[in-house]
Length: 227
Image 1 (cartoon, one colour):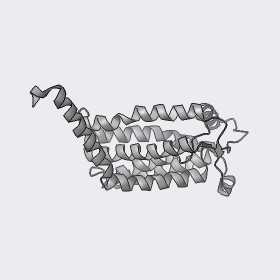
Image 2 (cartoon, helix red, strand yellow):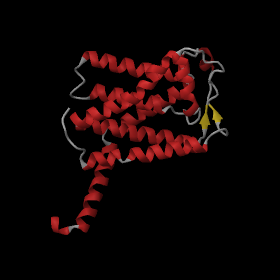
Image 3 (cartoon, rainbow, N blue to C red):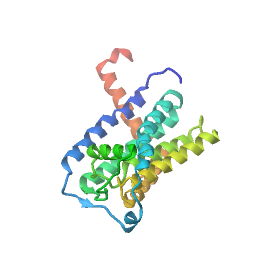
Image 4 (tube, helix red, strand yellow):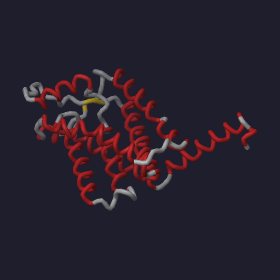
């Protein structure tokens, strides 16, 4: 990887992450029992499978490694990836704010193997609220699509097969672990598609450009001697 620091434009995008984290955990604390339950008939047909906890957890590494690679090697892909997360997560948290939701799908019995114990431990802090649309799905699709469009990665066939296989496994995991309803997955996919239209058509980039120019003008007023 190239050794480089983020540009001002990249810092603007990265600045949204702490805002999102604060907003998300505020929702987690606020929405506990009084929520609309998300459920459909397909949820009852899908069995609980604790072994999906491993692809489910891989989501965190998937997201971080993708972002760090793009930050160091591919500015265009980094911008598309970050803006996809910003727009997608903003839509999801806004929906959860105005429409408190959750799911009551978790099993009463988890089993005793290592995977089951990890699932039980995970669900002690990963609540069953704020699930519609699924941010897990939005994030996984954003990473997979950005990797598939990256100029430096799109021709690496083995990587692309692994990329989309991991994305699908993560999405399936949300359902097989009873973390999400099928409706959460469908709505998360819809949000991702809307996000791609906004981001890859350049609309979100224009907003970042306006913010960047506004910051430059503010700096010029503070230190006019640099002009």
